[in-house]
Image 1 (spheres, rainbow, N blue to C red):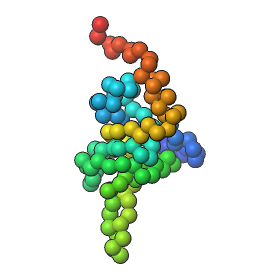
Image 2: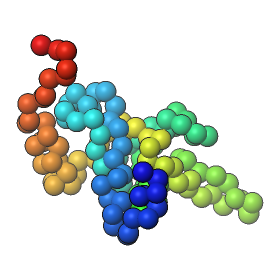
Image 3: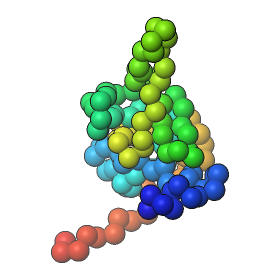
Image 4: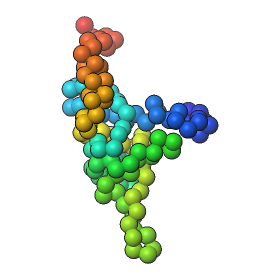
Length: 121
């Protein structure tokens, strides 16, 4: 997977920036993950900023990294810079549904009947 991610051409990472939803959103929308966008609220699950919740400012689909409000380091000259966090270390807490296409896509997924899990009746 890492090799294919590094060798992919520009624009091929778009489908690979899916982030897990929290339990409430999973039940509401009927899906486990969705593509992350600027404006979504996320929680950082791993790393130096673990537990921090913030709003996404920028998504870099080529590197698979996201910049979040409040997640910043101080440079030697005193200025602050946003720290890029890999999308696999995030969990979506709140979706930004201003985009009509995104809202329609999630509504279509929700409308599908849930497939039963093996062993359940």
